[in-house]
Image (cartoon, rainbow, N blue to C red; front, side, top):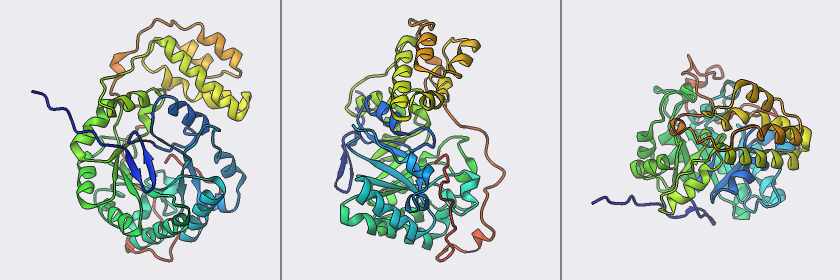
Length: 382
C-alpha cells in the first residue's frame, strides 16, 4: 500500500497566512509587478517583489522607486530588502509598512553576486553574527507596530569552511523573525551543482520558526519531495518558474493533494507569452514592456522546435502587434518537450574560485560597527 505524503497546511508568517506554502523568490529584473501578477493568476502563494536596497528607499533613489511598484490586484504586498546597516534597514522597513502597506518584509542575506558580497552584503553578511542580529532586530522592531512579519533568506554559508546557516537560524529566531528561508548552496557555489537538502533538513531540527526550503525545485513533484525529505513548512521557487509561470498552478494542485502536471502545447505557451508581454506593457508602456519581455523568450521556448530565426525575431520584438504576428507563426499543436521536465533553468555556471569579501572580513564573527555602505540604487541577482 502506498502511503500518501503528509502535506503542510497554510504557511503562517505572524498574522499573515499563505494558503499554499509556496513563495516566488525575488529575482532582479524578473519579479516585477507584471510577472508577479502573471504568476498569481496561476495559483495561490506569496509573490515577492524584486530586491530593493534599504538606502535607496530611504534616500528615495529614482531607480529604487521605479522598482517599488505593485499591481492594482496585488492585495498581499511582499518586498525583499537588501541592506548592511541596521539603521537604514530599520528606516526602510518602516517606510514599506507605513507608506506602501506591505504585508511582509524579507531580508536578503543570500545573494552570491560579487558586487554585493565584496561590500559585506548578501551571503557574506551572516558571517558577522553580531551585525546580522542588529539588522534583524532593527527590521523586526520597525515592522512590529504594523503587525508585519519579517523573514530572512540566506545560504548555507560563504563556503564549506565558513558555514553560517545554523547560527543564522538561531539569530533569526532570537530576533523575532517569522521564518527563515535557506538556499541549500554556499556563496562560492553560486547556482552550480546540486542544492544540499540535508542542510535544510538540519536547520528544521534546530529552530522553532518555520523553515522554507530553496534550491532545485523544477517541478511540483520536487516541492513535495523536499517537504517529505526535510520537513520544511514551505518552499521558495526561483529559476524553476522562468518561462513557466504555470508551475504555480501545478504547485497549488500538488499541495492540495491533486495529481496535476501542466504540459502545455506550444499554442498555450504562446498565449502565456502574450499575456506576460501585455502585463509588462500595461505597467511600463509598450516600448519598455516589449524590451523587458525579450529576456523571457528563450525560457518560454526552451526545448521547443522554434528555429533560430524565430527566436531572434522574438528577441527583438518592439510592439505587441509584432509579437502577435510572430506568435501566430508558431505551431500551436507542438507538444511540450517532456525531456525538459526536471532540468535546470536560468543561471547555472560553475563554482567560483573564491568569494569576493571586504578586506579582513573573516577575521572575526561579530561585525558590529563594520556595516558597509551599499549603493543607493544597487540591484543584484538575489
